[in-house]
Image 1: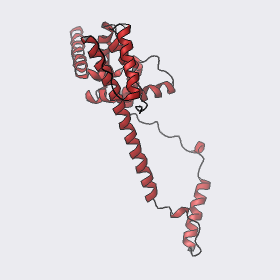
Image 2 (image 1 turned 180 degrees about the horizontal axis):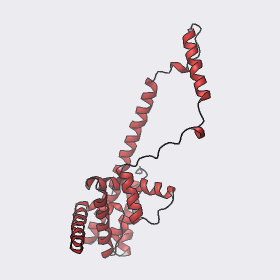
Image 3 (image 1 turned 180 degrees about the vertical axis):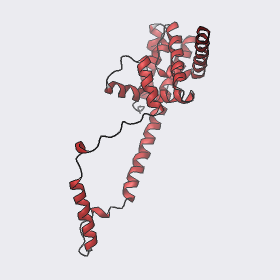
Amino acid sequence: MKIPYIKIPIADISAYLAPFDNETKGKIFQAVLDFGLYQQWADLELPERAKIGYAAVQEIVENEIKSYKKFCKEQKQKIKNHWAKIKNTDDTNVLPVRNNQTKTETETKTEYINKLLTAPKVAERAPSLPKKLNDLQKFSNAVIENFETNVQTPEQKRIWFKRNCRCLTDILTFCGKNIPLALGAIEACVVRLQKANLSGGYEAVCRNLPEYMAQAQKDNLEANYASYQTN
């Protein structure tokens, strides 16, 4: 039995495996493929340091599977609720006219149909007010502006947000919905990875989020103090 379709964050896996030779990487990637077929992790003979990287890769894949199963469960519940709502809705207005239907009922239906026919077309309606962004949308826009210069078109932004929504939510929530602090936490992670000549997605931020948030708070205090000294 195959595991369900999931998206595996290759950037994160590559970051964990970067220090190892190609033979070790090949063994671990083959283990990932075998897990997809047999749902069982291979017992690899690896150096002690490589075993830590292999364990991290297992955790990444299994977390993605859990997330996908949770998503499927939520979607099934949503569709059940949707159909239950439709079933319980009074649909007498769509029934054919009864032989004993009263004059008042007939007039009410006629008025309703006339109202639909005379309603203004979409183009003629007053323009809707711009949608107010919530905290997560504001945060994602700020992340794109600061860290994702290659994400420009609306379609690219939509795909990028869908891929990173869970991590962005965790980061923003952990930072108390303080967007500058959340951006600082991401910056602290980016600096740490660059110094180690590594790369990673936003899941890398979530793995050491308390440490990165503390670093962001420290950097913010130092910047405020430097600004105070200058003034």
